[in-house]
Image (tube, rainbow, N blue to C red; front, top):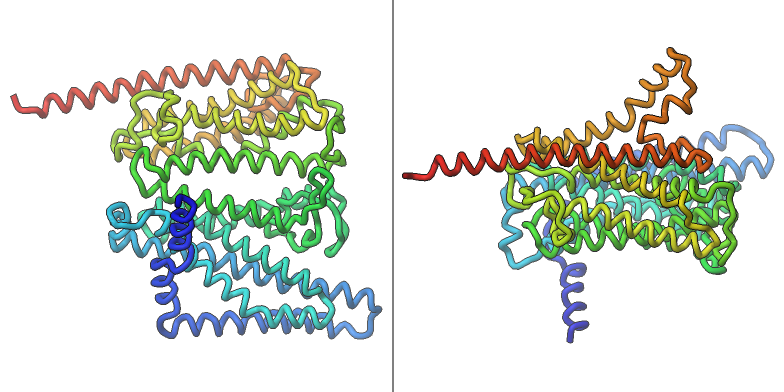
Length: 528
């Protein structure tokens, strides 16, 4: 019975979703959609015609050169599709949700007989249909590329699947932004900023992937990290790549699709948590999904990284010059997304709704409820999940966990506790609202992380101090030193922890002062 009930619930949410049907009908109402599709097809045909004309006008050439140019022609088509999807996907769902916000109907979801998940999945499905229509209308162009010899049908189908996943990812990114925002223009701008930051930011991992795996031109059946296919920059180069897991070659497009779906589910749950109150099942589900996503991404990144550096995923095959430093670097890179989550779980305000009002700074019992005092325990739980899963895989491959490794992990954990304490302290000064606290925390995080590097570099050059010496007092520079200078790392870790404890003490002192003033003001308002 439980399984049958679960299936009926999922069928109701994902098939025949009333919110999806209503939005889709609204999207196709009137003459505007027809004009948009006509303009889209016109631009696509014009672009393809110009790209193909560039191949034809070059006269007689060898077959090899022509084949290369036709492949470039096909890549141009994919680039055009990726651009159109990146322009349309972030704004479709965002504007639909903002329409609900402007009508003041978003608050009614909590009182209506539908769950936030039902409402949000409907928005995602209606927007995703729009993206799929973009791809469907371009199929004749792709068929022409196949007929001309620029690609095979297998490459076209996998590439279209990946572009569709990119569109779904853009929608997922824009979903919580649209729910948080109170106005249409900021929602659209922030959605574009986040999606395009992801798209353009992929240049660095794509370049490192190409260098690390030594990938040949498109179509080569080579081993490469799966996450390359999740980035719009050069996914078409790895459509036939794979990842070796326990001796089995798994096509990367399967792994990339599965991971994308999991992350989008995480975005949906996150948006649902924003719409609900403290301790709701959506918030608990968000925290649990966060741990699951952390475990999956850690495992996937570990396997692909080890495979990319030539280490087979078999017991005892790991060897490196400095395993402690390499493992610490791995965890540091993997924990970077915490930067985007930290402003939401390290800040508080007594000027907003109850879920933003803390009763302390650390409470393990609130780790899944979404209250501010559960933020630090949750960060530590995420790091513990990362260390356990990633460390386990590296140990399975022959790596060692020694004192040096523990010092590096103490440094990394102290770094995130420090950044959390900054948010806790900033909140005590930014009492105009939770939004101000979050923006201030993000600004201070960027300043503390990036500004000292050039400043210390200039000071070192003026005073003729070697860079190794000038950065020995800057705690963020822990990975600047390898295991031969582990006691410098230990000093920087201790520095992080001392500063974090002092900031937390200062913030708590200010928070209790704010509570005392509010209680005094409340008592004064009471009638005698």
